[in-house]
Structure formats: C-alpha cells, structure tokens
Amino acid sequence: MNRYERFVDQWLPIIWKAVLETFQMVGISLLFAVVIGIALGILVVLTRPGQALANKFVYQIINLIINIVRSVPFIILLFFILPFTKAIVDTTIGVRGAIVPLVVYTAPYIARLIESALLEVDAGVVEAYTAMGVKTRKIIWNVILREARPSIILGLTIATVSLIGATAMAGMVGAGGLGDLAYRFGYLRYEVDVMYATVFLLIVIVQIIQSFGNRLAAKLKKD
Amino acid sequence: MIKLEHVTKKFEVNKKTITAVNDVNIDVKKGEIHGVIGYSGAGKSTLIRCVNLLEKPTEGDIYINNQKITDLSPNNLRTVRTKIGMIFQGFNLLKTATVYDNIALPLKLLGFDKKEVKKRVEKYLKIVNLEDKANNYPAQLSGGQKQRVAIARALSQEPEVLLSDEATSALDPETTESILDLLLKINKEFGITILLITHEMNVIQKVCDYVYVLESGQIVEQGSTIDLFTSPQQPTTKKFLSTISQRNLSNSLIEQLNVTGSVTRLTFVGESTGKPALAEVSKLFNVTPNILTANIIELKNGVVGNIVIHLNGNSQDVNKALQYLEEQGVHTEQLRGEN
Image (cartoon, rainbow over all chains, first blue to last red):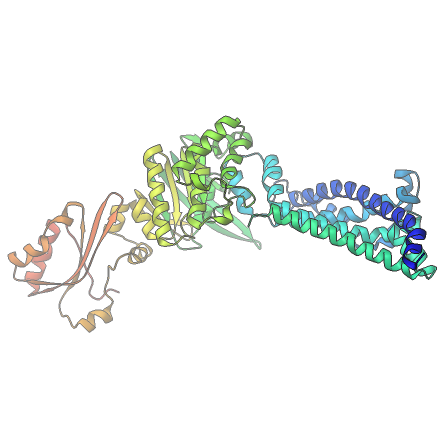
C-alpha cells in the first residue's frame, strides 16, 4: 500500500462524515436563515421612511437588532446565546446545538443583503406599477422581488460561503464538520495530510457554490 | 376629462417649506392633448404626478371624468388608476421580463384571465409595431422601442386618459418624432385624452392643442397652441419659442446689417399665411421691404409664419404700411431696441 492508498483507507470515512456534517449544518441553518432573513429584509425595506409601510418605530427596532447581532463574532455568539439555544432545541451540543446559533448569526446578514438587493430595484418601475393601480402586496412579490432576484441570488451565495466558514467554529460545541476535522486532527494532532485534504475540499465546495450562484444570477439578469 | 382645481403641492425639506406646485388650474376636455412646458425645476414632474396622486396635493382637487379622486379610499383610487395610463422618461420597464411579459404582467396582476391577457398583449404590440420583439428583453431594445413597449403597456389597460412625464426627453430627435406620431395616432384612434409635460417646444408644436407655461410652480401663461405661438406675452414663453424659430434679431446683428429705420416682425397665422401681403405693401405704399429672416412653423392645428423685415421708406409710409398689414390679419411687432 502506498501513502495515498493508506491515507484514503484511514481517513476517507472520517472526512466523508465531516463533509456530510458540514452540508447538514449549512443546509438546515441556511433554510431557516433564508426564511427569516428574507422576511426581515423585506420588512426593513418596507418600513423605511417613505416606503409602503413606513413605520419609524418598527424600522429602527429591526435595524437595531440586526446591528447588534451582526456586531458579535460567531465564536462569541455561539456561547453567548447558549440559554436561548437550549430553550429552542433542548440541547446545546452536536449539530442540533450548532444550528440555532448559525441561524441567529446568518439571518441578520441575509437580511442586510436582501435589503440592499431590494433597494437597488428601480423606484421608477415600482412607481409605474403603483400608477397602474396594482396592489402593494402584488408589487412586492411580482415586481420588487422579481427584479431583485439576480442580486438576491448573489447575496445568498455570499451568505452561504460565510456560513460554511462559521460551521468550522461549530466544532466547539461538538457539531463536527470539516473545520472541526482540520482543527482537531490537522492542528492538534499534526496530521498535515488531513489539514491539506480538508482545506482542499473547502476550496472546491466554495468554488462550486460561488460559480453556481454567479451562473444563476447571470441567467436571471437580462441586461 | 382631466381637471385640476387650485392644486398646490408643498414639500418640507430641512424644515423649510418648498412650494413645488402653486395654485394650478388645468382643464383638459375629452379627446384633447394639453401640454405643460417649463424648465427643469419648474415643478412639471410634481404636477403630473399629482394628477394620479403619486404625489398627494397639499391643497386643491383633481377630477378624472368628473369624478373627484382626491378623497377616494385606497381601493377606489386603485380602480381609478387602472383607467389612467402613464408613460415616463425612464420607460420604467422590468429588466428581467420580456417585452411580452412587461405588458402581460400588469394585466395578470389586475386580474385579467389568460385569454384576455394574450389578446390584449398581441393587439397593443401590433399597434406600437413591435410584434417581432415580443420575446426580447428591454436591454436588447433601443430607447424608442422601450418607450413603445411602455406605451403598449399603458394602452393595454385601455385607459381613458394618458399622462406623459417627459416621455421623449431621453430620445433622439428622429425617435421623438416617431413617438409623437404614435401619441397622435392613439389620441385619434382611441380618443384618449392626453396631458403631457415637456421642456421641448417641438413636442408642444407637434401634438398639443393647448399649452400651459409653468414657472416656479405657477402657470404664468396659457392658451391654445396657435395663440401662444402668435402672440406670446411672458418672457419665458418667448424664450421657449425662440428655441424653435428665430423670432428676433439681436441689436448687434441689426447694427452689423447696417439698417436704419424700423425693424419689424410680422407674424402670419391661419389664412393670412397664404396671402402675398408683403408684396402688396410695396405696391400700395412707397416702401420697400427687405426680408432679414423668415420661417414657418407647422402646428398641430395650423401654421404660423414669422418674417422679420426692414421697411425702407419715410416714417409716414412705413406706419401706413404696417397699419395695412394689421388690417390684413398680420400681427406686427417693432423689434428695434429689443433683444
């Protein structure tokens, strides 16, 4: 057996498990974060002064919450909200325990990205549809969100990549994943090959996600 | 059909009140095309956006088809708005939708069924001459074609009234002509009443029955297009007119031409345009006219001609000649000493 075969034999099952854990964490938390983030993003745009549902109070509250959460680094947020995590999923460890802080961390980020994507939409188009007598609710769904789709896709791509970065730290609560693998085996145990392999895998995964996002956005964008 | 009564719009900017539109009255009868002309910053855009309440007027009322719309509930206002088409300088099309979908989407959102949507999209694409572009995206179209799509979109709701917010200002002269022809066509064929705003005098010249001159939010002069072109009163109106026809000679030019005696502008309108009045003058009186500049403008409802002449002769004969011209229906104005 050469070095390569030995490495595959010894590490492939472990790396594969870590990849699955990473995908699991990213997938589940992305799902929740997107739902919450898009809702928050739409709300923060609509309650802006001068917009359809202008409400200074709601606008400033949401803004404040987003800013507070966004200013806490993930590694600190992870421990800071332990009681909240416990209350929601009844555990603070493992993949389940990691998902709550990952969502809390990513949702406000997505909200900001959605906000900027929605604000990019030409106000003139919204005005044209208002002038045609179309209901505000329909304008939000069929005009604003539709026109913002390319920017939203790009934003979600960025959010996904940063979410993958955050899952590396989820190893701290025993959630596993590629980042955890690289840290525990590659760094603490001097298994350099494992470190290289995980870093390589992360690069490939991020590349694939980014290219997919870019391509989808370009396809939706028609100018 | 479109009636504005004492409409005023004020904005609060940095705790200062700015009056963008000041006590404006407009009355467009069914089937007519009226134009508001003014420089940028005069309040034109705010004014036209008040008509369909995109801006809510601070004071005054707006009537569409004799219905007062300034105090309608949001629901009823939406219903009224479906009967008021609007086109914009920036076209305001969806970038992510094809030409077909740009026209179809509003209809779908307003609750028309699929068959009706398809029927209308096809009908109005044909009217604006863009059937072959149905599957193109706006980015693949020229400015004029985009405006045609916007016009088809407005028409597809079969409005009674069309508002045009500088619809030709972003277009080159030739394209402007073709869009104006299209506006005239839909005005004639569908009897759609049009209120437009512009800063271009040739738009007024080509399509408008009646003109309002807006300055600092106020209408400083108004009248039928012919009247305004024949005898403008306000400096702003005169300035706008001189953008499309030479009505004056500057003092320095008169000096250079080395003419002595009176320099007069003759304005011919309607029937008098066709008469050889100037030739008769030299026969009847002891004067010899020398034409310094001349032009003729075709308006929607008539023709206006301007001739700037220098009349040689003694002042008595000159006065008699001018009087005769006035009697023939020619409007005369002494230019010497004027800029």
